[in-house]
Image 1 (tube, one colour):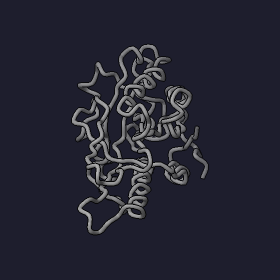
Image 2 (cartoon, helix red, strand yellow; image 1 turned 45 degrees about the vertical axis):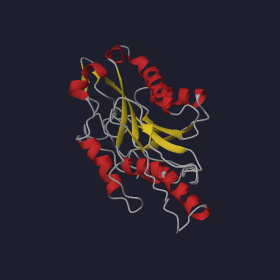
Image 3 (cartoon, one colour; image 1 turned 135 degrees about the vertical axis):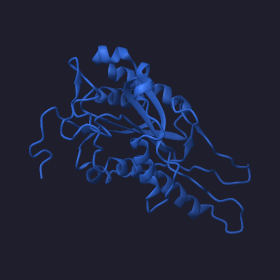
Length: 258
């Protein structure tokens, strides 16, 4: 398991290149795991040489700061006060894009080196898989807390893919979203278990791990570590890595160190 701080996330973890691969998945229902869209005849080479990588992420205090706001003594999304509420953490979208993109590049390079035929009508077209979201936000409050395609968060992720110098795409961004419930807001200790249970729902899209493998990104504030450790312990064949964003309920001083 690896831990990263807000300002250094994109610099420290981009060195952790993965040696597997990723393809695009699409879903018209953000609450359901996406299904693969791959069509090839028996005369074409295999589309994937390596498993795919789907980034699975928390939102509050992982992608954007909760600001440490509380309601009736209960944290409203997280504990982090290093950034203002709603601020996106520097480098986090690029970090997730690189994790998603690298396997696509590996698969395409392998195809070009071993199967490419300029006279063939078949060509390998891959896009990075969308980011799956495991959030503690209560599904009962979905009307107010739903992560919509037109939200600032979704637009920021999508823009990262659109502006990439390598394999730019408009298709990358928020994918399936699996919510928590009010019970986890009341009994905070259940948040880690709920996220793990939602992860088990997510991997039903490919339980063999032959198409998709996963990288989980969370934070140290609300039992994401418990969820990540359980994922690694129960599904080591498909969970490739867990990254945790170090958050703090104390105002920033010189943290992270300059």
